[in-house]
Image 1 (cartoon, rainbow over the protein chains, first blue to last red):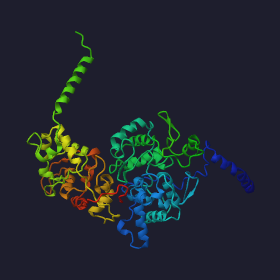
Image 2: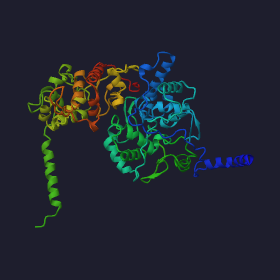
Image 3: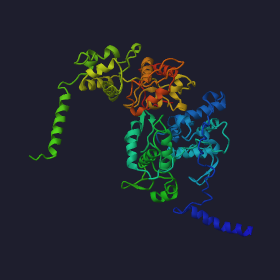
Length: 313
Length: 247
């Protein structure tokens, strides 16, 4: 009986693998298991989010120096690690308050959750591999080597900040706590109105953000200097979570879930650098392989007569 | 007689066009002359008598630097003084005495003066609780972003909406933070008589970005963060535009 099952499985496995690779097929349920990275639980009433250690707690030794270097890189990624950053983004743009703020994908809620399987690349990712993804997609750059000084410093910073968080236990405040999709769906035109009223002041009508000299102050939200089509933020649901909790800066949780979804859709209905995973130069093929099953996104979707996902350089 | 519905509209358009023409004086206003000698209306005193001969303000009176501030920002402040969105017993009558062309000319003249320049320093490691900490790290437990996140590295200002904090005196920055702060009503009790709520005297921040920040800052924090920016000083060294300013 067991042998039969084993034989059957052995015979089926290649088929299953082929099935998983087939672009338009549903993903292999076993491979797709994301239970290691569950949605963050709600914060229990009256309980605060995890409080990461204070800056003064960084020890004055070689380890502390590496932690501080990690924090410097986190805030000045483009300036201090230009060889790995292909746009005008810094880690701190999406991870507010130096990666400490709840519902802004804080490092303290991420570090202890890895290694974990991610369907993004269909394998178990270490925390370092997870950060490499940030460089490849959100920074539209080149991932530093796993044993590079840059990733050693960023890892040390995340490890330091996570002191006291139980390993493998998902924390309230993890990720962006995405609001559920609005009942009547999202509306790009309505999102444009929200954008013009609430966002354009800093990010510009053209979404290009603003710089002082060489330094990016307000990050670009679309166009060549923004995150690429493979970044998690290109998902409307993910951007809606970030926006609802953190934007406008300092006035988070003032937009409604509907406004957050609408404006996230407007932002992510613009061109940005190509998904580096582009399959054979084919947007439709890339959509099937990587985007069809990846939350709510507009890659390869025709909006206003234009098929999105062309990429900009 | 049949009046076509287009007639009244055309009439209104004609009328508003002539009104608009009326509000623009024939002479071109000279911004520099107004700064030095005042406007056509004697109530529009010379700007330099308070803002300094070089436009860099006067710390003692809390008079701000105007030199190198964005033209659109200065023009907006004058309009807001005039409309009462920014209350100030000295500036409101002056803004009211300047006509539209004069206000525009003054804004242009000040914007043409040198911008504040702060030496690009190495990475700063502020101490928690200091003015530098608020300026560079914020107080996110109260949703207060670091000042430099919007006002730019070293507070040199960003675009037309986020003016430079560098180059301003502590007196001026403190006064603005207090002006943005409303004081809530207090009931009579052990601490004294009932006090009515006082609305902020400055209500012209885009999207209300400053009011909640000022409301959540303590008096000690206001003093500390104002002193930090006032202490940055000014350099004449030109900044290499390719050089990153670090946070």
